[in-house]
Length: 185
Image 1: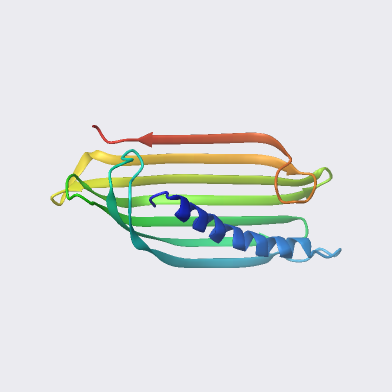
Image 2: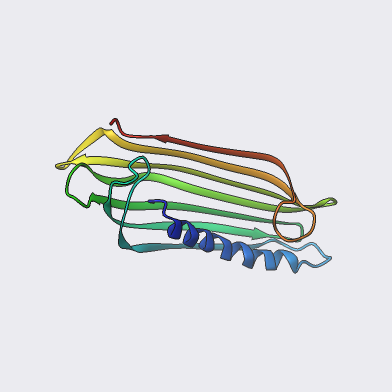
């Protein structure tokens, strides 16, 4: 998906709502161990066409039509919560001025996992997001390999929430990788 501020915010809200709902289940545990609660969700969302640019081609305007499909699972029991969300994006970006390649977003996966475990020192939080994406360039219906944009992003955080606000107060591990392969230019 073309990473605009509004789409990132919408996706973050989409991801946060199930986590908040599951956190309510997590917080409502009983003293007796019980089977975990499991919730599955999925859907497809399309976005209104917009004018914007692409990674590596900032400043070049495209008419972009896009959307996403997603599925995930929430598992909550008396001492832990696990959330998984897998998103697959689809988009077509046509140059607004009619010059240059049209880009098609294809095969891609953006996977997010979030785990919360109770411990004596507080709640351990582990969050990982991996985004592998490609925008393949086509000119006059022919694939232009040298025009392909490749994106590999990884964010991984392990932290400890000592005050119960759902945010890490201390971070033990933090990894952030942003690897972009841009078209020859």
